[in-house]
Amino acid sequence: MTDSAVTPGDPPPRRASVIRMILRDRRALAGAVFLAVLTVAAVFAPLLSPYDPNAMDYMMLDPPHAAHPLGVDDLGRDLLSRIVHGARVSLFVGLVTVAIALVAGVALGVAAGYYRGWADTLIMRYIDLQWAFPNILIAVYLVAVFGTGLANVIVAISLAYLDDFARIARGMTLSVKEEQYVTAARALGLSDLRIMLRHILPNITAPVIVLATVSVSNAILAEAVLSFLGLGVSANTPTWGLILSEARSFVSRAWWLGIFPGLAIMLTVLSINFLGDALRDVLDVRESRDIA
Image (cartoon, rainbow, N blue to C red; front, side):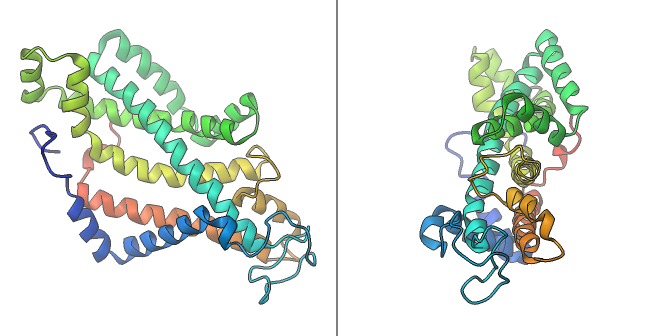
């Protein structure tokens, strides 16, 4: 982070550096290509999937072959079609939950760090309480309270990861608010809201972006765990976690039922993490670790 505030006339910070880093880093490039292909497959799943993901029209536990490249599950449904459609849920949940957690967490963290006093004490004691429990445990508890379904899963995972963004934002705000340009903005009579929006937020984006990238993969894993436990979306909606859950009873007889959805989750999470590593190298966000 630089010592000067980011102004609206400045060029997009290090955009060209990010692109060059991705092109030079083979892992990041492979991750970007895989995610691009996965996103296209998810968006156009009804057009690209060879069969209806819920159609039970084929030979049960049929192994992979030309007509069904990834095999058929125990109810006679094409596994490739179900995995392609499952990508829609996983990517949607991952992106939306992180967006909600980012906005809410950063707002709380910036408010706590900027105002200090009772606001900081109230907000951070709640964040500390949530920090004491694993995120997935919080998500499981919230889904148990709110009920299953896509909307409830999104709310539960968003609330579970909110504390990560709040802690990062508060720590960075405590540092940025002492800079001279913030003091000058106060002397000029700018409102607190305008100072936070124009001078603090632009200067804490680097660690927040990196955390958001990592959190997307964590949110995808959380959704898979909830679906695996039967706490995810509707049973009629194919998701990677649900497919894995249904494969538990057939591991010894139908290896493809667990291998392929597991590979989809693994490759997606690895690809996102590879991109996150590249962003971390470009943005050099050493301050984003263990800031409280």
